[in-house]
Amino acid sequence: MKILVIGATGTIGGAVADALAARNGRDGLYDILRAARRSGPLRVDLTDTSSIDALLAATGPLDAIVCCAASGAMTPLTAPSDDEFWTGLDGKLIGQVNLVRRSLTHVRDGGSLTLTSGRFTEPLPGSSLGHLVNAGLDAFVHAAAAEMPRGVRLNAVSPGWVRETLTTLGMDPAPGTPVADLARVYVNAVEGGANGSTFTAPETPSRPSR
Ligand SMILES: NC(=O)c1ccc[n+]([C@@H]2O[C@H](COP(=O)([O-])OP(=O)(O)OC[C@H]3O[C@@H](n4cnc5c(N)ncnc54)[C@H](OP(=O)(O)O)[C@@H]3O)[C@@H](O)[C@H]2O)c1
Image (cartoon, rainbow, N blue to C red; front, top):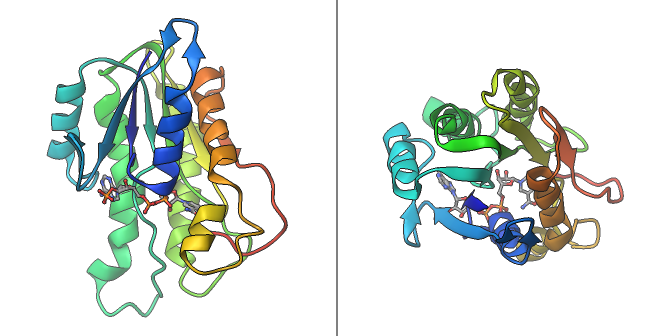
């Protein structure tokens, strides 16, 4: 299986690419293509559809695409400019929706697309756009799965806090999900039969998450 992981230099994307690379599937080891925005041999900016098209032209036909890209910065309603406020919408929601639309002719029969949303356990200040983006992605996946052609499956993974991210932020890592555990959720989305589902990471104690 030839699998493209977008956001592969990130905390989640790197772990997902490593977890998939370690798999020995029905057809042998997976061929993992790692893409990111600013480094590595395969680059893409999800906010630019021509960049998505160029990436897909470079990879050729794929069996699966996993997108762990985009950053969801906390943006207060009082953000000084509209551009600043809507950044998360373009980078995370519109970017991943465009990725699905552009990928439809590149994913082989019976292949899969897996996106990343996210979840909050409570409405933190500055999190309203993040709630909107994550809920929008989950709703999009649920409905758009019915439009997938040729048996292609579309799902999302909705992580809470990742333990390694909490450590990087200097916060208590204990409530976070270890990224290796989260990566297994993505592997299951690729290898399983679900379509139109949002998978959550293994549950952790109730704490604010993004
Ligand atoms: N980590 C968590 O605790 C957590 C929890 C819930 C949800 N999430 C969600 O999971 C996703 C990944 O999180 P993460 O913590 O792994 O992020 P991360 O470590 O910051 O990595 C982000 C990855 O996405 C790439 N990227 C960023 N903007 C992009 C764009 N416009 N086009 C293409 N690639 C882009 C980055 O590439 P460059 O470095 O080259 O820019 C990097 O490879 C995000 O959507 C985040 O909201 C994360």
